[in-house]
Length: 119
Image (cartoon, rainbow, N blue to C red; front, side):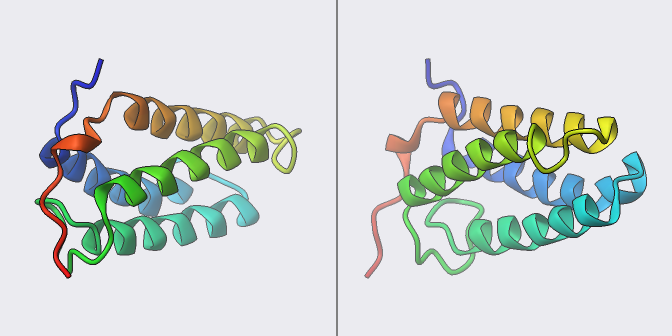
């Protein structure tokens, strides 16, 4: 069931950027987890502003590619949670939940209602 429109997905993407940038202080993440969170925040911001949907500014990548990028990131985050961050409960739970959240958003977003490709 695809219940998230591309427009609402854009809103969620910008909220995710804010979450990623405040999470190190909010949750007390380790130095490694904090660095990854800031890096992901910047990458998510760049991905969002470059996507061809209502939240995009430059519209140079398709919404489907944006979704594929988020799918890959979500899987990597879940793997990292239980490998690299194993032993640090806060980091482990943060990245497991973050990966799962991104995966759920990917699963229920309607990527077919994107804007026409601009070339």
